[in-house]
Image (cartoon, rainbow, N blue to C red; front, side):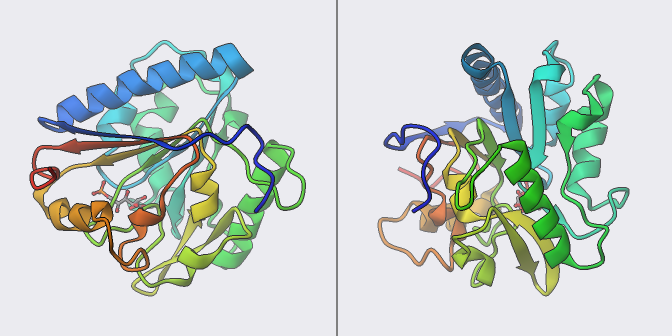
Length: 249
Ligand code: 6PG
């Protein structure tokens, strides 16, 4: 087990069911603003890994309205589709349009996942090295992100950690190649996510009810429902809307 770079604490888990997407966005923003304040007070720096997909977009738009010290914040991505950065499916493109290009981030504070090597393994290794350098890691160490934002698919995947794929079993790397129906992705590994101070899932929609029931079940196959693998040493937040959380007691 790699050396933790901070005192490991027992995971604290918070599950909140909110009325709708708007309430989830506001709650997530409130939590993030506290995490940013705490990180800046303690370390004068805040590191966050963004989720892709559609759910987090309103949160990114809300962050663009905040007056924050962008020169103390570093933004990474938790996963990326293997497309050009100007492709409509690009997670980088979505976050830039919704938030990052709307405020004055120093360009060196944005750390998008590379997808230009025409070989996802090469780009995954490049990003792995970028994290090792940024966090000044020794071999085998994992960085501790202040916040990792995640979504969850209706197959219970998160980041680009899809059911029954090799990426789920990678324990000795920070970044690996994900696989969605044969399409390559670049993704954080499970251990990298699990070293975070705070992991926050934003999940909406009735189509997430069944996978959520499996993720929260006392027994279920984590390889079939990969979001079960997310058990961070820090805080784990699940912000669900009423539709997604309907069957949870
Ligand atoms: C991606 C995401 C992925 C996403 C889920 C949920 O690259 O697509 O990182 O893990 O979070 O698929 O997507 P929605 O928010 O669109 O439901």
